[in-house]
Image (cartoon, rainbow, N blue to C red; front, side):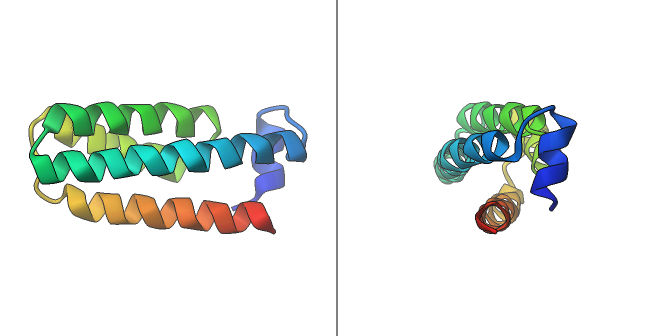
Length: 105
């Protein structure tokens, strides 16, 4: 993941983009936890809403891998299909961790 390139794609300085990434990591982590909690409770609407939030934020920052998975997660939750979403949550957590590592370099 090339932070400098992602920043340039959005017309931002790298340090500005990194500030946004830090905020995204914080809010994205909360969204992923909400998805996980909603899956445990069987609350498809809550899972879909949290995935939608994550999708929007990641799309705005050009984070296509997170966006794509959040979109898939939202779609499945909106279809009341929570089976298999725990795996998506783990993947999203991994992607957020990778992003955090890339942002620290």
